[in-house]
Structures are given as structure tokens and as C-alpha cells.
Image 1 (spheres, rainbow, N blue to C red):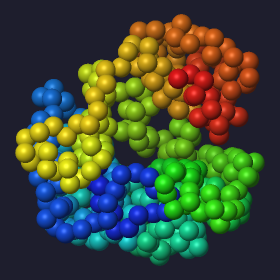
Image 2 (image 1 turned 60 degrees about the vertical axis):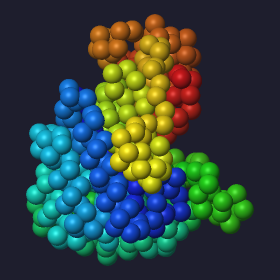
Image 3 (image 1 turned 30 degrees about the horizontal axis):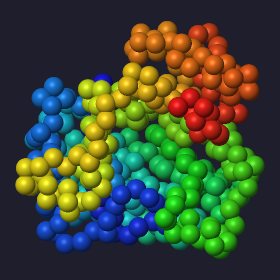
Image 4 (image 1 turned 180 degrees about the vertical axis):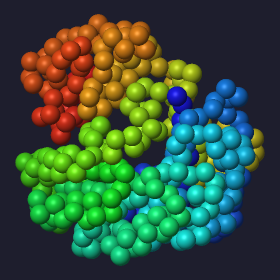
Length: 373
């Protein structure tokens, strides 16, 4: 399988925790310059590239006008025959969706929506710099249902300052009331350069201790699994059969191409990325110049270790025989000493020829992965 990612860099405002590349939405000229540049980039993709999945992220794709979204969907559909994709996801933020936009997405072939809810608490939404209200979440959700889009995913966050077990419990209650097919639960991280990072550094925020955040994560796992969701990746839960196919590409070492400013790709053994500047991205492509900022051909060992780490994000881990057949090396041949040390520490498990994170390691997975780099 292969996948296409398209980065829409426009937002109505910048959230206080976000360090993804985005700009505040401006005039229509800049947006249509971007769309024209995107069309050019799509026409330069390899002829053998036929994505099984399409994922449009941001930024906030639904911050675009209805006309711009129609143009975006048309550009993708005509240049890639995206109707053949098994899964076509678009990220939305509550409050930016209208009935007309939802109808355009549905008619264009979109069959999965990922909604950035983050919290059902108004104070937490304000802290995070979100523009939407809890009422906007429910309104947008109903719009999607009415449009006939059934494969809906919610993003929620935990580890929020001022929160506790009870606040996470309430967010789960509210999420389950909507009956989504998929829920992603992400721990708040303080990225350098963001407003929340600066507030934390100044002492204006009281950060939750690790033990409480771990308790929140364990509660999310317990409640969602009890409700019939399968915990299939560190931060992701799905009703059976509704796992995110596009993200599974990343976690299984699959190939993908990213278009748009700041988008990353891995294709044909080469990793490359576009410049994180929408104006320059548009100018370069409209002038017939590549928008790539970086290209790197990974060594066999580096690519193999990267695939191992990404595969271990899946809760079921990896079948070591299948890994060797696909990658060309057994995990124990690749980094046996590190794996044995992590097994001895109770962070990795080897059972029935499968290698996976232990339950205790799921919450601290980044520290495990650092040992395997």
C-alpha cells in the first residue's frame, strides 16, 4: 500500500500548543496560488504512484471557503483518480464546517473525517486556544451525519493543566455519546516556541505530575476498550474494522508522498520534504522549480531501525518472521543487545515470535524508542 498526504497550511487562528506549520488564513489570492501550486506538484508525482489512502491535514482544511474546498477536491480527484482510494480522510475543526462544505467533501469521495475536539470542557478549550465551543462539536458532528459520512474520528487530549481523572472521565463520556468509529487520545506536549511552552517556562501554568497523567492514560484505555474500541496503536482506538488505514502505512514502514508546504515523503528509499513556507512553496512550483527542501537516502540499517520503531507503535507489536521477510533483517540481528536490555527491564516482550511494548511501556514509549534509534 501507499498513501498521499496533503498539507493545508491555513488556520483561522493558532492554537496555544501547536507547532505544526500553519499560517492565519488570508486573502483568496494566496489560497488560490497555493491550490494552483498544489495542482502542479500533484502532476509531477511518479506515474506508478497510485495511493490506496488520501489524508488531507493541516492546518485546518475546513477553514477554506466552500468554493476553495470544491477546487481542492477537484484537483485531487482529477490528477490522481482519488476515487479509487480505499480511505480518504479530511481533518476538520468544529465551527469551521457547514452543511455545504460537508456535502462537497462527501460528493468528492471523502469517506472519513477526523475532528479535532480536544476537550468537552469550555475552560480547557480556552486554555488550548481553540476557537470552537462544545456546542460547535455537536453541531458539526450532526452536519457530518446528515451528509452521510459515517466513518468519524474524534481527537481528544489529556494531561491538561488543571485537569484530573474526573475531567478525562467526562470527556470520554461525551465522546462515547457521539458514537464515533475511532478515537485518538493524545497527551498534551509543550513544544518549544508555543504560547503554552512559554507559560510553562514562566511558571504561569501548573503542569500535572507524571503519575496523574499516567492514571488518565490508563483510564482512557480501560474505558474505551470496555466500550468496544480496540486499542491498536499507542494513542489510537477503533471499532473493529475502522482503524485508520493511512496512519497504519506510517506504522508499518509503508511508502507515502506528502504534498504542500512542510509535507514529508518516503518513496523509493528516499525521504524528502517541502519547504515550510506557503508563499515560497507557491512561487517555486508556479515557476517550475521543485519545492523540496531536503532529500535523504536512508541507509539499510537506519531505514530498518526506523521501520522497527514505527511498527512497535502498534499495540500488537510485530511478527518477527514477517518483519524479516519484509525488511530483510531479523529484529534481533538488527539491534539484539538493545532489545534484550529492554526485555530485561520489562519494557519489551517477546511472546510467540512477536515483539511488542509491554503495557507499562506504552505510556513511556518515546524513552523505549530512543534506545532503538
